[in-house]
Length: 431
Image (cartoon, rainbow, N blue to C red; front, side, top):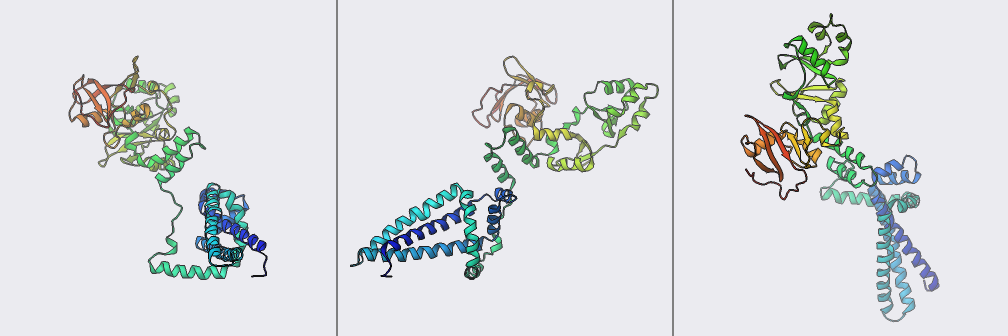
């Protein structure tokens, strides 16, 4: 070693420091790669395919990188000691100085800097690195294999198996976080649609169905003129047909099937109407929207009757109702949402007590509880534990409401001021 020029030793030390920086940055960059993006890039990027192949065996990859990193670090420490002894041949001062200088240099230039760059730009660092790492891993394979076997034995002793490493499956909440973090890459409307799809498993048909008292249908027990009037004035294309009571349902009628019969008045009667009725499709209460959407697709239906455990009809749900949960309401203004919400001159709303809590939350941007009663009327009655009198004011979950009209068993109309900002989540009703 004494015959080697000092300048050559310094050049060799600089090379080893660069090699150490390479191994440190490679480890950080490969472990920081987004696995889903990597799989996408692998379809057309050779370096991405190599990186994905290396990451399939992380123990082998980490073992090879650490083997190379520790080898160059130890060699660098040896050279630094020789250089220190060359500069200060007497005493241990040269060794001490070389140790301190090498430690600081390695931390800054071989650890912190390359790992920071690799974490910030993992693809830019990892993709070129794989062309060097792949042949090195093949070259060091026997040594790496022995190291991995020893590691497996140690892990087995402490009760850990290699196949217990984390998998890439994401939960619903993790997917929600991914969508939220991709806000700059996804248009806001598309982002909201993705979040709504994830929410389908939290919502059931009970939350969006038309309650039985609001179902518009054809009662065959009524006189023929009333039936014809319902057919000609209906705003819906499909109507349930029943006899006397909605529980005695005959089926579903598509108005398109009876248009020609209406023109043939002499031949159009209850019997000919029955021939056009299609068998009703029933779904149990509590069915998740995600499941019901697939059921609609399999059964090739667009409308279903929701029944309870006794077979009594609770309401009606359509494919369009589920799609609205994904894409949002087809109307953007509360005033256009139907007959349930009416805008007043002062900016407040007169709301029908039968409006669903979910619809009210969506239109006004509120957070009324949805895990209890499904309608505003039910929510108010549950909160007050009585039928309120007109003129009663309350703050429900912090939101102010004035009871305008009631009848003997329900709240008919409520005034709501959306401009009010709640101070607390729940306050005692004020009468």
